[in-house]
Length: 177
Image (cartoon, rainbow, N blue to C red; front, side, top):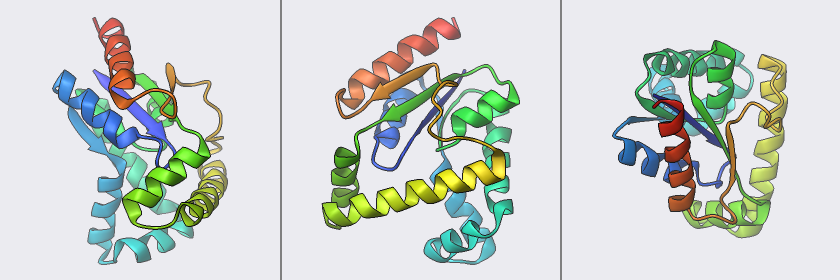
């Protein structure tokens, strides 16, 4: 069983992926942790590595290679921005999920998590989304806003994580019965 959960910062992918992986007793593979491991291997702080990665597409490719390698083994929930696209392009049997959330709510969540103001989080989220949209398009030809590849598109600004997790679990059990 392979489940991918993707969404923008503050959408609720971490909480949702934790609930799904626990309920289905699957390993949770967060793309952020793989990125942090790459930073350690490069001997850089996470902040410095993030800046470095913007001008070095090989970093994205290595991150995605590691995630795809793990995805091919199955038995996991992969939480990463491009996880659904990776599974789709690799032709892997999976349940691909996009978690949407309105911009104001994402900013509120990010501000609370990071200890910043909502206005600052809103601006940072917008800038990050624009940078990632350009980067993913130039590196992979992927339009991050294209949700047509997803089996489920859920809205965390309307649904609590438990309800979203149940929808993902139900779809996954049906897909991998």
